[in-house]
Length: 170
Image (tube, rainbow, N blue to C red; front, side, top):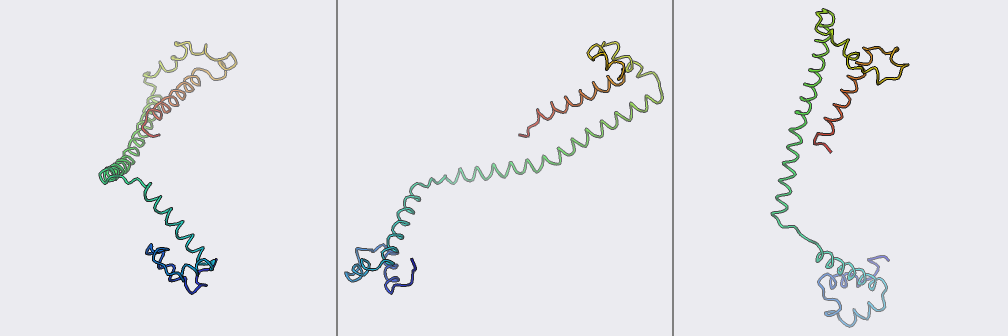
């Protein structure tokens, strides 16, 4: 279908736009539409789109302005909380890393000075009988220090998983 091919197209478009088709149309225009495919299709499409526009506007559910304002305020507040929370999370991660590095440096310096404060550390696996948990082939290979390191690593992993699970992030 090619619009603009019929000389009566502008007249019919004006009638349709004002809603006067076919009531205020001349008998010559009605006879022309009956004979002209382009004008008939234009009328058919315009009326179909008009019906759909009326149906769509009738089914549209508009929220009250108060609800729209409340949602906008809620979104704005949540965005501000997220913006503020990012540096705080970074500071918390930095504090944990600094604390862990400080603890490692302290333990390393105390172990070098051998003040005897950590003598219990070497005896802990044996006094707790933790080697009973390992297969016999691993007991000789790892020793007490390896077992203690494995237990500490497991404790750190479990603690990290617990902290992650308890955080607010989805």
